[in-house]
Length: 203
Image (cartoon, rainbow, N blue to C red; front, side):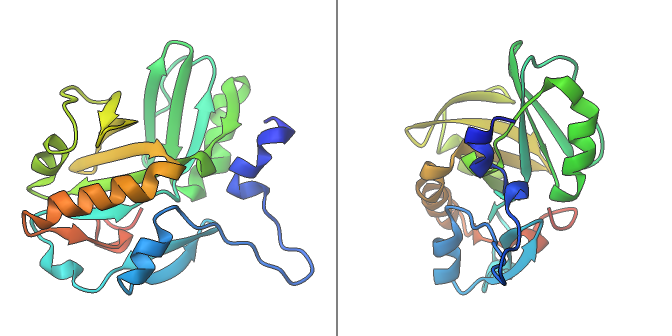
């Protein structure tokens, strides 16, 4: 990994002189304003629950930006396994997303293809529940997944995961895309949820 881009990796942070760095996503403030409960997971402050989430059975919107994100060049063969998501952007480039606990083992598996840890460069928003597809259709005209394109009038990527979808966008656009997703969900009786409310357990 280039030293000039080490700031994108949460793993590059270390305790110094009593200071304990914790990463926050671009959606952190919006979740705090909702009264979310946070826990530190994988070096991130993660919203594990949000008041009222139990009412959002039609569709839930969760922030899973704390997932480890590795860029591979060349894309090569897929990396598979429990807790690992493989997304080939092109034959020359792919993203691998995984739970923070799997980060080191995935890096070892990809070997020389590992190019950059871009964990801090992207926001990831999960849309889950019976109305997840309806919410997504109201945000994008992308029809095949995984795929990239315009989402809420900005560029991003959509993956099908966990009975719903993951929307990946540049971290500086994360707060905006989150608000659009929550707005579309609220019209269907849905809204924000913490990661512990995701189907299949916490991310």
